Length: 396
Figure (cartoon, rainbow, N blue to C red):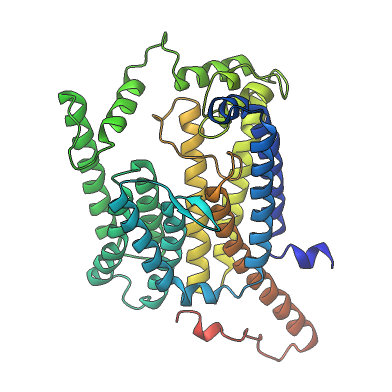
């Protein structure tokens, strides 16, 4: 089988993913030693092999999903939404963030929810395209988004914020009234800001949100940093400073031996330590190229559901990357968000790969249509462009 048939979709996105996953294998092996020893009492080889298997499985998932007619994702979006909602409710009842299943193993339902919700919101916007400017449509979408965000919030504020912002931006892309959109955004930012300010001033956490004390401490350390403290944030800054412009060389990291989350939350700092600011810029550019290709693909997609799905999933991945990199360089307080397709793999890596597979499914459809239209125009100038079967049912 030709590679062009195996790796369907946008070739530039495939190249970006290939480069990011390669960087991931190198960076994880270089930075996972301390975590492997402290948590498992062993060297990095075992965990690295596990990460390698996850990366390989992600390739398989993307290839398989890229071969699916993306309209099927719309038809199963409602089911996926309710399944993810049930899983989140179970986790809230268990007061945990992780769920363990026999075959899948340990995973966070929130990782499924943030992908499924984007697809679901895109579907609803496609179905309601004639009423998208109405207040009723805006409120209906919020009624669907709110339960997911509220169920994730008690255990993971940053993921809840990422889910809300990504889904909310899809609403903006989908043409909801900007008047309603901006009003709610201002209210949401004001509520979060006031709540955080009060907790910082009083030093009291919320009884409802058990992890609120952790959030307050993280923001307080970010606003009032202690340069003498051996915190992960300070170690990350030291790693970046040591990396300079060209880095100290791959495998020559010192700070990865001192930061327990060097393979995960702070892997971007280790990349800069080993490859310098040049390496950090390359990683940033790879994510930016990926996002540009997603927006370009959404613009070229004829179907409303496909365009909104690609724009939404691309936005979610890009925002998560920006948050992780911002934390590593000290622009944002610690959030716990991983660096997509680079941080140590688990089900989070795999589920983001599924999102990429959906994007490639849309891309494959777009390019197939354009090729068919070009061929039709060349051979039969008088004929109308062919419409792919099922196009009229995309918004079902």
